[in-house]
Image (cartoon, rainbow, N blue to C red; front, top):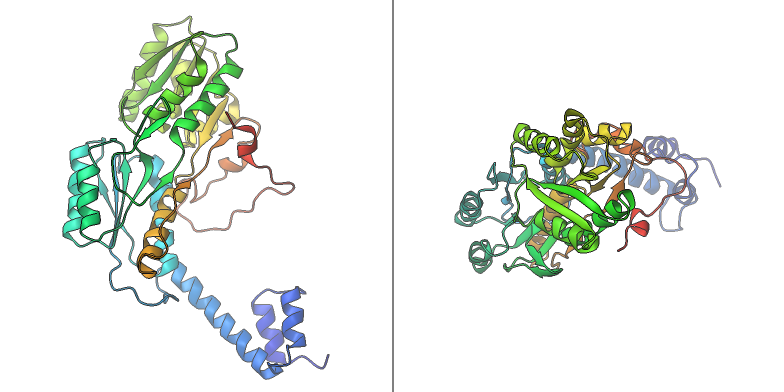
Length: 385
């Protein structure tokens, strides 16, 4: 190989290729591209890299063809709940990556379905390019979702998709796809964890913020289906206000000192569980869902034995991407139902999740987060029911 053109070498260094196969192929050429051509291509790649970086900040040029309408709406049931902070980062990051406006975030602060329906109707009136909503009620969203679809607006559900009766879904709406955890199955996994921690049965409690809603009731139902008749399970409502959740849990535990285990099916109830147990003077097996900072701390100190992660970041990122691609492709790229995960976190594997990041909502910074070195284990391999 002859002498490397200095511009080629400079461009390679800029792209951080080192001695990679890509570097060697570029230096060797293909018989179709001269050294000068390779230099031009690499310099263009450097320029493209800069443009991509700008796009990540919202100021770049979308590499896809123009799409006339890019107004997307996300309708949520607890818009100010910190569980959905990574969801909002996810939708914002997808929009920045695609070079489109950030989707509108609206809905209810306390699971008021009428307010969520109003937010969907607002999106329809605004001729939205797409709507993503949390299907916390199995039937209430049927008409507004159908109205949106009839108006030519694609609709996706995220985080929740309806109620399950004996494991059978009652979706009740005409949405294109669901992006979120398999909720009933996640409850079954929880039930298996409980049986391991409280072998042989007995009295336990499962706290739930809002009984009957499609985002968390399926988890309780799934857990109970696994536990069977040897467990006496109390389903205790805690509400959607953080301080009230702690008070409700502590009050129940103080009145039931003989209980063998305490668990929860939502983020807030799980986050308050360790403090409630401490306040009631109980040291018993406990666990729940999600990665609130208090939950991660409790896992780290062992006061919680497990928490089931569902990846709220992807629940913002993927619906934005799917709706965009649906519009870009003229409906050819229909969004798929997507399970965003079912990872059982324990005191033994929680370490990586305690790192402050945008993906868990603990930091607003867009930063590379190195993964642990060594073998990659499939978290689903040990969570089948």
